[in-house]
Image (cartoon, rainbow, N blue to C red; front, side, top):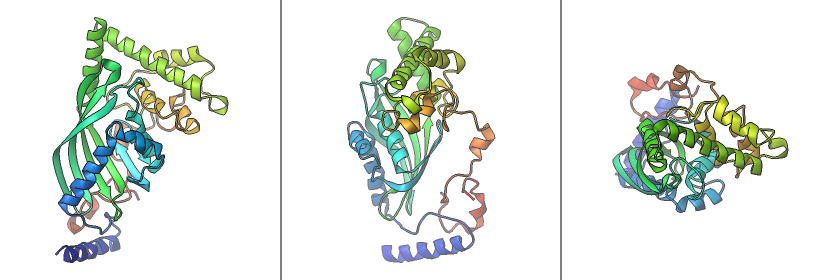
Length: 302
């Protein structure tokens, strides 16, 4: 039965490709297999399993040319970059960070077709920089796997992230017995100090971005905003907080991201419409066979 379905899927995919629509590959997984692939990713996302993935440099969970998009940040290309950001970002409970390390998850919504699964996962993070606050984070994902069970595309959305940031600031305000404004100022100073210390340690020689610690701190606390919930991929302190975690792995690549220019990641180079309409993915998320709707996928790269 499965063999017949694979043949049918391959036929439909070939027809769509002939019309110029690049759908996902003809591989078809059962729902149980898609569930296993989904949970394998999340099992490895948790701390401390994510350390092993990070140490691999290029996680075998991804294809070499994997494409990824995260709504609050940006797009990430290639297995090395995605390994750093998806696993390395949340792998050190002793380092200052917004949400800390992921310690548990629950998949609350799940559906799949062919080699694509859509899921909602509530991940419990231990926000170690906020007094070991345990905080649930809801992440919506679309994931596409190739015939080897490796992720070749993903699209992730952090649901209610603005509410999450406010909750973290409120927790900090309580811990310092201060106001929201005082907590925001304290968070700004904490993040800036951490980024500048990382810069002084790793961004040396040709990778140096600031003349000294004071220049770094003044820029991060005075010249750019802390950032809103959708600005972790713009010219903000929050964006540089994200990329600061990656500097130790590849200073040449990531030092510019925490510097004044923001590199290619912490910059205001997109309008709202440009972000929404960005043509990025090589393969369509629309299942093969919907021939009357092939022209609907405006995110498909040309």
